[in-house]
Length: 447
Ligand code: AMP
Image (cartoon, rainbow, N blue to C red; front, side):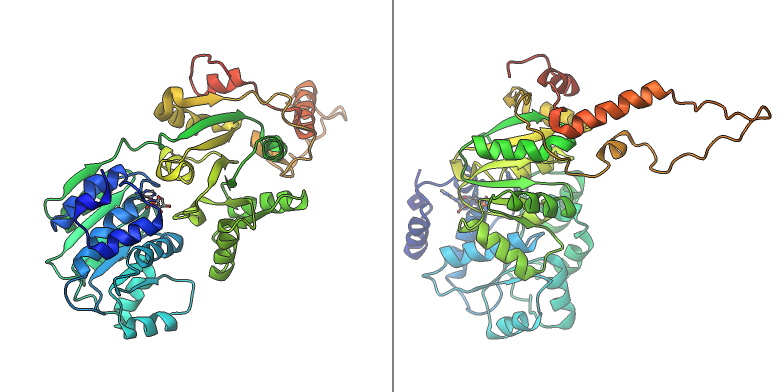
């Protein structure tokens, strides 16, 4: 199948060629003809499947006819990065059509957005919060909307955007085409589709699971040794761009800093950075100034960088959905990629659910010998791991005989625990693959 079968305008076909798309991806093959008929669509598609072009091309085709410089298509997405990315795809695919697009999100000045809206645009990509701000200020006219797209709807729910979205939808014409894309279809999303869509046609590309073009390897390792393991992997494996995920903003900053100090080209991307710094980090990663980007989940939403060969989960994500989103940053649009996940003994629950979803696709790496001596990344990691209070318990009162009773915890156990902590902090605390598999409830498998 090729793009000509959709009978798109020649200017759009030319832009598709320039973008380097030779044949439609499965979601494009299924969705483009349906969207062109004007029907509502509910697309259950994973990240990295080409879904942006799947809705951008038929929308652009529709907008070629009719008035210009009135907002006729609105795409709502959960993050600034995804909003920018969508805006870019519209710009790229619509470059010969004279149609214009703008992006709207918070964290930057509102005035330039107001000026752009005054000049007139045809397509808007927006985050819900700032869009609602414009609606309430009366600086945006949504009365000409013909197509509404809700992208990554499940994530918008997770991020608490549902009330904002409902308020925005009230300002849109009732007669419109509504397209909703989501990696998963939880009950909340299904309920929303009933409210805002009319008999949507459901298009599903594969199950809601990680993409097939990515290999999945779990590395058993204790927290203290993750930093050393990461460096060993970066040294030993030839990679393109590498995206590393951490659980918190603080950790993304400290891991990036550690890598930088050790001479790796790395930078961090997290929600505490100003929009300017986020864009700088992302652009630096995109053009190859940094080989490694250390990011948190929220900051990484919508990252679309070609040539990410490896996604490394420095901290395992909590849900299969988050795993799918993270690993979908590699192996995009039919290229292949590798996902490595560092797994510690306390990660039992997420390991189980991810393994349940991936099944035999998971390979377990033996990390023994991979980790060199290395100072632990976190101070007091042992204490935090065992969940013991940091505060020393008060000494027991002195007995009538003038002696104190022996502490309840036997000193031998305390000594053993301390010795283990020391061993781990010296970097020898890797877990065996067998232990990891037993954590995941898996039968033994070749490493
Ligand atoms: P998306 O799922 O929209 O984020 O797209 C993922 C990546 O696939 C982006 O880098 C697109 O430029 C790319 N892409 C989209 N459609 C195609 C296609 N038909 N052929 C090759 N690459 C594509």
